[in-house]
Length: 247
Image 1 (cartoon, one colour):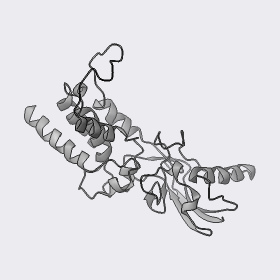
Image 2: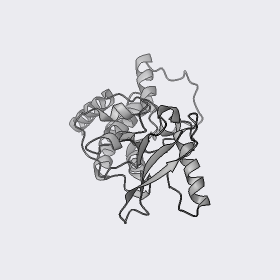
Image 3: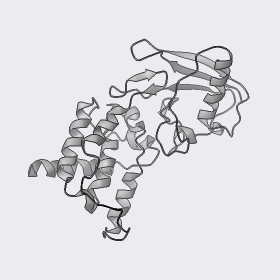
């Protein structure tokens, strides 16, 4: 396959960026999208040019690092798929592919396709944990949890914090991420003692980081590689309302 790429290049957050055109030959349909970028970067390095900076780590769809907007869609055209799991057989020979970073006020560009997602870390630091001392790990069946709650908590816990929801949201909202973390702990017995403080503090951190408000457009759920449902945001809003009443 031969592909025509238009890649966002930006030396740092303080300078102006632009789309730069590249051509990549001999792309195997079995390559992942990141492997295709590796091939391009190897060529650029051999030619004495600056390679394209992009985030990656596990390349197994677990870490959430591969944050690319591909042809206007976060993580590309395949649903429930991270960029590192996207294969080049999803494209055709001769295609033109636009590759951009996440674009949101709360995710400033560091270099090229790399953005600063530490705002998510600050949301977690505000309340995405439990502080009850547990000693050694308890037996899995020691604390009974209703099956429906366990299933919903596990679904929310699959969020990998990639930020695709923010990139897709027209408001740059991080509510789906925040809702997933609040839902996960709020459904389990271990998360009950700090449930009210958690939702208030994490939403405050969300707003302080510069994320926009949620208007329920649903774009976030369409690009989420783990399929976190929009109902998580409804649960967050309900928990916040109740927490404020009890405060």
